[in-house]
Amino acid sequence: MSALRVAIVGAGPAGAYAAEHLLRAGNEIEIELIDRLPTPWGLVRAGVSPDHQDTKAVTRNFEEIVASPQITLRLGVEVGRDVSHEELLAHHHAVLYTVGAPGGRRLGVDGEDLPGSFTATDFVGWYNGHPDHQDLPVDLGTERAVIVGNGNVAFDVARMLTLPADVLAATDISDTALAALRESRVREVVVLARRGPAQAAFTSPELLALMALPGVDVTVEPASALDEEVATPRAGDARGYGRSVSLGLLRELAAREPSGAERRIVLRFLGSPVALHGEDRVTAITIGRNELETGMDGRTVVRPTGDEEQLETGLVLKAIGYHGRAVPGVPFDEAAGVIPNDGGRVTETDGAQVPGVYVSGWIKRGPSGVIGTNKHCAGDTVEALLADHAAGHLAAPTGDGAAFAALLGERVATVVDLDGWQALDAHERAGGAAQGRPRVKVTDVEQMLAVVSGG
Ligand code: NAP
Image (cartoon, rainbow, N blue to C red; front, side, top):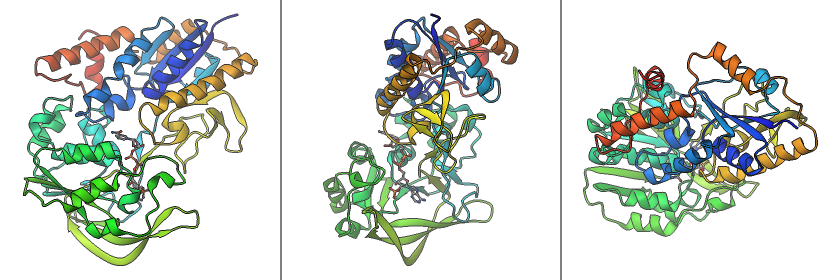
């Protein structure tokens, strides 16, 4: 019997873990790990905060996984542009999409698209050297930044805006962002949550990290939010993720006297953005005050009190969650931002299974959970894929690996393989070593390909 051929599209954590699970199933499996960028590791490279190098160390496991002779790395190949979904399926028994959720959600308020208002997704990509976000017109010449949402992404961004430049300079932050942050005039970062402390989306370790920032006062406003009676903890959310944050820590913060430090982070609760204002760029945000009530489903929801307040700000960052993007030729649920699926088996919107097509990671279950969550998620999907193969439900491909390589050769000038990625990785690390940093990222696709080609 010929080997089971699987294409995994998306070389982030979900893709790497899916490959690992497939490898465990035996050596009669060939895997092609595809990504549209010339670099692998998805959000570990371009999402995890530069000051969290310990978290980024998970890429060492990923490097070991892709070193398997059963895996062919094909980076710089975009499905839907260079090769169609149908062509991919014609060359593999199964295609497993692990493309994540690359877009930021929208608020739907007036002024949202003014210059100076960005999604945190774009902003994080900017400071993390993602080639798509290097031209983001970030202007840090404002005293106050407002971050909407209080999940862990909001906290990542709050730290990046307040960490001393010398600390950032020892990380793999992009050089563009480092230069801008060195000149930053931001002195106050407001992290705006529509609900109360008991429903906070950030986790306690991230709050502790914020509290430990050098030269930064962290305050809680309004302190009365900690007395709210309607306080169903977040762990009880219908979405079933997240832990309720330690209210004790927040009380400790609320009781602290500000030290008069140069920078300040304000954890602001019970406030929703109503509108952004400005002529040519954002100059202010209107915040509507909320009170809590328990909804029909037991979830704590907000009710506007009608009170509003305006805050001056030149930078608004929307950290209200990520949103998936459709892959041409593959079903997509636009409202949820995911590929519809039943336990990882892709379905049409009417629930009928699409043979040979699978999903894992954020494009399967939505943008929640930590890196390790993707390991279990990929395990479930791979189990379904292998069961379908064993049951004879996967059509044999009409083209083999050589035919697929030939097809890509006609369409893509430089397909980056494992050697190519290792050359780029070594180049970045060498640049970093010279500056006492983990790496200096190449942030432009053409320059990446030049390094790969030995230029
Ligand atoms: P998140 O945890 O889902 O937080 C989203 C935040 O946006 C919540 O505060 C939410 O409020 C708010 N929000 C949503 N819609 C809004 C609206 N229309 N108006 C105002 N606020 C709105 O998402 P995330 O921060 O993007 O993180 C994604 C996942 O990655 C999470 O599981 C997170 O823990 C994980 N992550 C982990 C780390 C880490 O471990 N260090 C770092 C980064 C990310 P409600 O709660 O009221 O909906």
